Length: 137
Image (cartoon, rainbow, N blue to C red; front, side):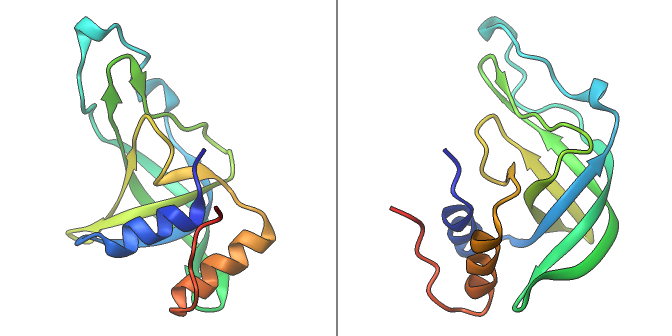
């Protein structure tokens, strides 16, 4: 089961730059890869343009309203592919690459997961401030 604090720690330690958001995506879901038979493995699918509307994480929480374009980058592992439902509220860790925000849609939730409760949102803000960021045991 995905843990927002564990995901934050992983992206914080990554060499790439990430930003955290909570909100909803609008995109053409028909462009997402479908479950595949293992013989038809295509590890990375074509990027999908998306519009995002929500809030960006900062030291005081998810209080910065944002509307921006992002690029969804789905990938598959065997028959399992990353997925996302347009309009569903999610927590997303977007990678900053050449001025664009890239969302890695992986088969296992990590960089995209269900939006967390208020308590977890507060803990994520504490992580941003450099305070204790230990994931739940």
